[in-house]
Amino acid sequence: MVFSSLNFLLVFLPLFLISYYLIDTKLKNICVLFYSLGFYAYGCIDNPHYVLILIASLLVNYIFGLIIERAVKTRKFVLTLAILFNVAILFVFKYFDFFIDIIKYLITRVNFTSSFETVMRIERLNLVLPIGISFYTFQIMSYIFDVYYKKIKSERSFINLSTYIIMFPQLIAGPILRYSDVKNDIEKERNVNRENFLSGLKVFIFGLGSKVIIANQLSGVNIDVNVFEFTSLSASTVWLESVAYGLQLYFDFYGYSLMALGLGKMMGINIMKNFDEPFKAVTAGEFWRRWHISLGSWFKDYMLYPILMSKKMTGLRKVLSKCVNKSFGNFFVNFIAMFIVWFTTGLWHGAHVSFVLWGLYFFVFMVLEQIFISKIVKSQRWLGHIYLLIVVIMSFTIFSNENLSVLIFKLRKMWEINKDFLDVNCINIFRTNLKAIVLGILFASTLPQKIYGLSKNKYLDFVIILLVLALSLFLIYRGYNDPFMYFRF
Image (cartoon, rainbow, N blue to C red; front, side, top):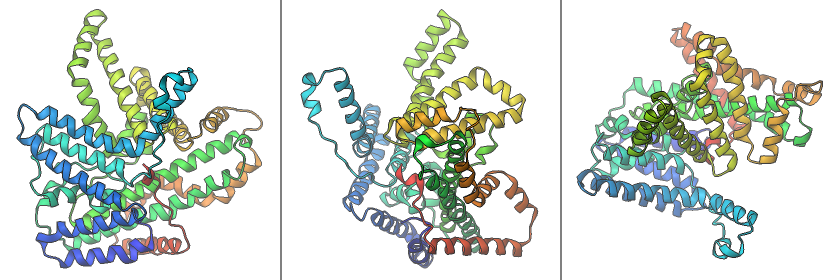
């Protein structure tokens, strides 16, 4: 059930809000949990056992949290079990087939088929990916890690912990919340006031508009491009497709994040901001501090820092500092840690080689920025914006093409600067989708926020919100209610 559907907007959400506001404050978490399970069950209607798997995961991790807090000598062992349990579930559903395919391919390529007959007989599971599994698994693990590192105490209430993990506003596509950020909101008796409700409703409607009015319309570019055989595409068409896809992905995910934030406000729960004008960035590093903030901070806090501070890496840094110099020691250790993080970031997004390449692509630029690029672009910010846009637009080409043959062709084509760079097909696609493209570029900049911020007129505010809502509902009614792009991760 997507937020931008009439089922959600006209049935589920009104029923939830009525129940939530009428129920006693002490029972609000139970209300959220009940509707969240119903929301998830609706999305798993063809695989109802996925709901049981989710509930079992909640129960097991609730117990892990209690044991880790009380354990002394076995704390690390229990943490390892908890990590293995959660990663195993994610691996089976999302990565098992991917790794089996790779192993079989490698065995076949080196003619070891007879030596690995048992492996070759292993069949793909072909399981349907449970919606939101990557998001709620990372959210569960952040709770377990924080209990282990004594940043928080384990939650004694199973209802409270479950509410934090599976509350429907952010269950399917994040943001990946930390329990410490919402603990007070979940544990206290929430009395939602009129101001919070209206503020949340406003944010939700702008998120809805971002998704329906902008993101969904930009999908037309991709549809028009796919009419042609990929080998016939011109360089300009590939660039246009990548720009349109990137804008669509941004407004799709940004819109979802705004709606999640707005729903949280209406419930009296503060959900973190997941985007901060990413196209203002001048480096890839800065871009990722502004795009999908919750995922970036998760990898930084729970993977990058622990790797850098581990005994093996600390020892390696000391050895290299003595043998070469301190700067090289720090750089080499950072290099290894960043490689692991970006490899995993790519793999997190999808079980396909193209996603791994996408992660390593950003890793390369992160390293280059550490060496010399950052110094150049930060002194000449206009140059930094051009550099960043080129890097990011090319990354969208990698991200959106799982077929490696198509991907390689498009990456090569993008840099073919000749008389065939611009063709009539590109011009026609651009003209057909001109409104959506211009709207996407305009609203990806800071201009709309600046213009909107000039007005403090509450009546103008009301008119804008009403127009966005009306147009969004009209477009949804006409069939523009595509699933959110990040649902597949």
